[in-house]
Length: 98
Image (tube, rainbow, N blue to C red):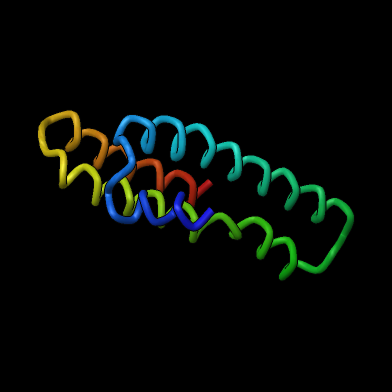
């Protein structure tokens, strides 16, 4: 597990895998799952602080993934890397707002 985070933090993971699979696919699934769970908790009339904690729980992971994409893209360079940096920034904003 630590190797997963270490390789991404150091920019050693393949950029395509990091952007498409780790961030867009897995990250989005985690965000949707936490939002659904938060809505269920809200429907069960549990305390609002608990609902908000569950809803915003993935934010630190989202920030980690965005920074990892930026670090990896800076090492790779090129137009594709710049577009992935821009896409990861939009993705982060969308996951925090939604």
